[in-house]
Length: 374
Image (tube, rainbow, N blue to C red):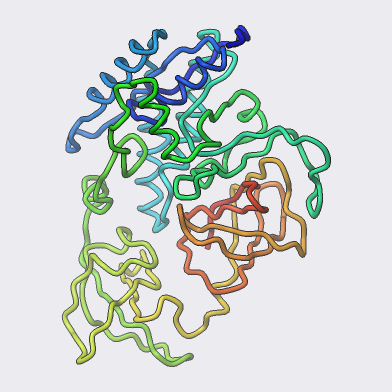
């Protein structure tokens, strides 16, 4: 082990990924400090952060490293929870995990670490932060310094949630397990006899865990009965038959097929998907087909709040894009309008809600992305 005198603060969440990240950095010779990030939890959700903090403390004690606690309750409440609620009220479908990374893990956590003398921070994300070597500008332009790459384990890759990171973020960020498969992470945890070695992975919204989104939003947004409309089967037909009811258009996202009540049924009932919603009229439109009647209109979307990490997409180049975490990669081209906006064209129809993140890739490099705006 070579001592390098660099101090790295690791966000230890009480899970196996962050635990192994700390162990790897110690092995690499860093001065490692474990930091538990405490966030906001509403009263109606079972509090689990105390259990997670206890596991994080046990890991740090086992590894013989200092343990600190970063209070991010205010930033999480305002920057993640309140933002999510306000976006849903507008009829949008925000991604809280994207905002959690931007506001908390790479915002308040880095500020906290820097104030306490850290040279860098590290997290247990399955992603890679590479400084490109040699000429990597083939079919790309405006190369900067750091590249955010997918994690080696495709089933765990989390680069989708990190598209808002900038060069200044990557300059002081390490992803110690991004080059590993999940099975390898478990083996390392067992090798070091970490208390979290066989602990199950956390699920659900960042820091809040598993939750029913409609139930969560129902504590902040008043429910309001509305009509479920059946989309016409023929192009140009504007008639929409009322076939059911729902408790509020704001609670739905496009592509859903649950949460509404049908009052009219056909002989050959098939699953019905939400293909449109109108917050002002409080209606949702459903169809047997996700892309209904005029598929061409679902190929082009406006992006706002765009961020390009290492490369600005070129006109007339083919890229890949994801519209949701672990969604399929779809061919697309990107037209940059200005610093904050762009237009993305898919090669096939994609049903995307306003407020969703679309993330663009070139090979295994996450170029960045933006938020869909209607």
